[in-house]
Image (cartoon, rainbow, N blue to C red; front, top):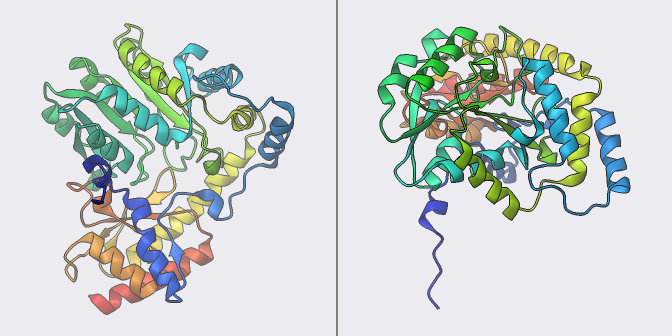
Length: 399
């Protein structure tokens, strides 16, 4: 029997953040101690899911019928999201505007499946979270990056956004606070991007999953832009609420003119097919929005201290320079690649020789991520120091 080939679109997917776990696993088999600075999972370090979330989940398993839920997401969670968005941003939406998903990744997938036809284009920050590029391409579209300007604290190049809009453009994506750069965009920048979207009749898609993880500057939500601009705001519970493994995310539509009605229906048809999000975890997610929030301040305090240490250590290493992190929990340093052919080769050698696992910058944008790598701010200071001691030794050998 002939070997069955996988679809071309599936084989072309390349999620760099987890692809580097393959060479890391090989290094571990050889006995190498690993410093896993590649995945933004706070629970792998000293950040704990609040106990009242866990207690609620245990009770939910005992007290719900454990049957299927609403395909759009359970109403009590959607109402809690409505209240939370008003509390955070003063935004007035209804529960009918909210869609609960199995993590934000599912939301991105479903949205791109509804929005993108073959040949369509979507403007995406470069560098930016790679799921957007992957899913646009998966559905036959073309991801079009717009530059984040490293020399200006990774501020979006709004002139480039204007220049890269074509008749095929279906929307503009903003990731704020940004993954992988940890930039926090100011109000002026968000309003300027919103103005560009409005001028060209394009929806704005704003990924705000790190909205409460800001330790320098002030977060400004795209939900606060003028009502006549059609928007989809994405958020979730994995990062701020410290439940990444529970896979709870959401999006909501702000579309007074009904421009996105077909996209909403296309997404809802997919949500019906997938049946529903995890029912007990939705109850825990609801409580996470309504209970004590002091753990978020503690998290930001830790991240700020670790961001300061990481900035200091990285800029002391020959051949590496890094901007300050201002939100989320990443840094995106630049590296002198003169001893290597690519940033991917740099990463593979670093893993093989020192066990320090980071992600090559080109995995976040082939055009504007080259010559960089993404690291995380999540480990305790002792681990950060050990990892960057190894990185420094590695660079001293190579340069």
